[in-house]
Amino acid sequence: LQLKVLLDGVLEARGKVLVKLNVDGDHLAEVIRLVPAMKAPTVSELFGQGGYAVETVVAKSVINTLIPALKDAGASDIIELPLAKIVH
Image (cartoon, rainbow, N blue to C red; front, side, top):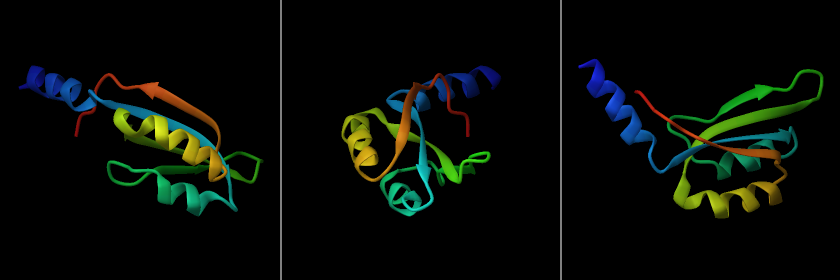
């Protein structure tokens, strides 16, 4: 059972990446509208900056069109990271 959970996690992560970005409060709603999420994107307030950090899981098939759209919507410091496993 434990091995199946791990293998299923690897299969679930295939074709997906983690996207992290920063955005100011004026553009947060627009950026959130653009990002898909497994449940909902994680949004954290930046310490002493007045902006927000957003992270979400995205299909690799849309990442190359999503990043420019996020940039146009006001996102900055956009990072794309590979995923090894997603365990529900």
